[in-house]
Image (cartoon, rainbow, N blue to C red; front, side, top):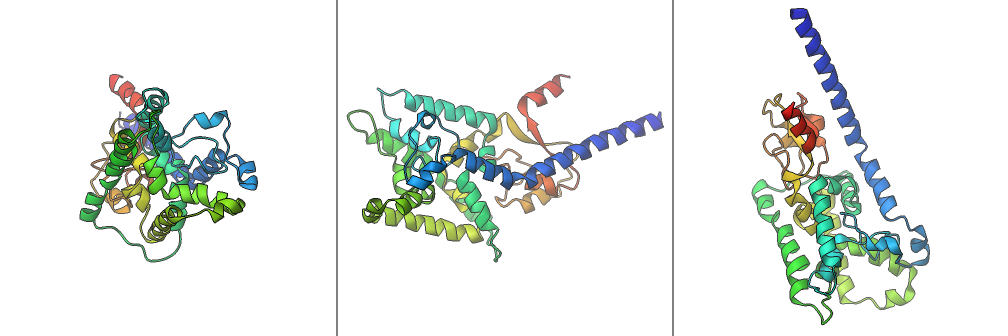
Length: 309
């Protein structure tokens, strides 16, 4: 009986090690997946060459990442911009369609899209690779500022567009127009580079948003993903669904509360206590550092199936 039990334990450990190895491999390839995602999302290479925005049928669809509609290579619309433009309309069902589609994406995987597909997230990740002294935001300060993105989501994405709409029920995309640095990086700068007339017409609004981009860029060199962590309304919306999303992180019974997951997390998330925190972008660093393989990728329906069996 002892030999049988030992054999079963060895088999179990072998399965766990194999699963752990596959998880680590996925984590190592995260930036490659991000880069491929950016190229697919901005696959209209002709737009970069002629300085023209793609307006084909694919632009009527959105994917849950912060990728500017005005990027010459963008094949899809930005969900945040689309919601703002049509949120107050009784004549256009597109706003309801966008919110519903966005919610479905959020329920499916939460902020996984932030960690693996978002172009502006990749931009910040690359800036973080620049070798210099890094600054860790104190937990108390971070705990306060993390609510800023929820304020921006409510005020700029929903309240302002709903309150200030024209006779057709359309509104300005206030967050995109006055705040979003991704619009400058992916949209305005490539267009200006190819259009002399557009460059000559730049004014104070461009200067304001370019200043925001510069500030975010400089901060991203010393602080990990400051825009995602404190400003992005898209991340706020996706994060709300992290605790109930189908894809999730799971803590198994091997956890020894060593807190290595919290120490490695650049968002200061105590993964051993809150593996599905609204702040988590699913980067997987906690999985790599766990000494006892206690953190796993999981899906809600597989968890329920295992419980029933």
